[in-house]
Image 1 (cartoon, rainbow, N blue to C red):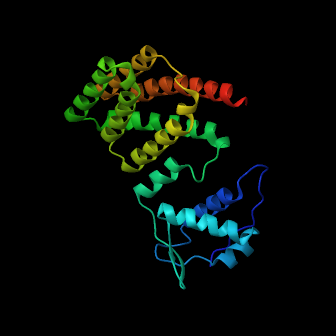
Image 2: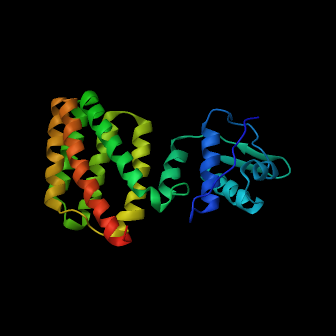
Length: 238
């Protein structure tokens, strides 16, 4: 049976969240296969050096996500993962705290750049027309619908790229950023700036120029990430 090291908790870190993180790392490590029984609550308490109610709370959270199956009088079993589970891990934020906001923004920016390059390489006529339509919606929609149109353009870019894992990871990241931070900080960009940033991305993908697509997305994400970080700092006092 694979071993789990004891937890050293940072100040203000929710203990159950840290236990959840550690269990997810353990489940994703390859040491546990779908259908395997994981250590009991008592064993996890001893391995991690935390109290039993905290372990129980973490197990229930991962059961809710679909990672674990709790069988009465039998134990707790690893159910495996699928894209929907990975999406919910990001969306619900059960394993990410407020202190990880900057890391999340950086990760999202890097993945968007990768997606843009892949989309340029994989694009076909249907994909180009889809992106053209999404860009037109961004240009013509009412102000109240612009944020949704912006998200739809990025989602279409991920579809054109053709990598379902990256698509679902980005879907979850966007949802968490939107629900966790954008709604709290409010608008952090003007519509004109946001739209103008997307035009060179589309043009590079249309031409099949992966290098230009990555560069255009990187420029867009630098501005978008900077503005959101500034908004976060204004609202949190960091």
